[in-house]
Length: 264
Image: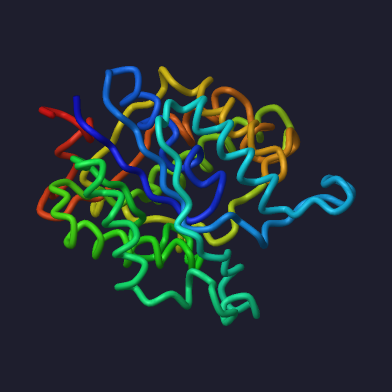
């Protein structure tokens, strides 16, 4: 049995980015640990969603606990930083925000967990945080340093396959044209994730798509039934989320791994 620690910026990131590999590892008998940097204090919610006096972070913690159970995580930890908001917003500069945290300090917090767990594998994000969110970029920086401090042997940078998504949009646009349906474009596509040539690991998680979607539903404050994640067709969901993509330093070129825990 090996131990997978998966490190994320906010509640709900875990199921979108790594929900498949988490459940896959759990079902194969490995230990899964989820670490989240913030409690997502600055997420957007519809009016009247929360009870009077209920703070958003409290709801998001409960949602993460529910999603973690669905995905098979046996330990859930929050590093205790505050959500930094989107890039360029005032929340970036608030004391206690993850974006303002000294990398070494935050890395020591994560490294302590990695040591306790004797982690074999750590997932973080790519150097752009997949889409440029400050907290996601900080996960990359903090995670890589924490792995150095703890001596974690395998580190995978979760990303999106930009070329795969482009091809999918073209495919579903052609289908929509035949039926007269409309599909939305994906704003910022050219900056999302990494080109396929830079990706070294592709994990097929299609057997766990129902679990992944259930974990998304657990995050009701952020992922509504009308959201892109839950409203898209089964075919589109499978294409978009049926493979989870990673970069591992020293691997490649091209896809050289299809299982983050192979051989452990």
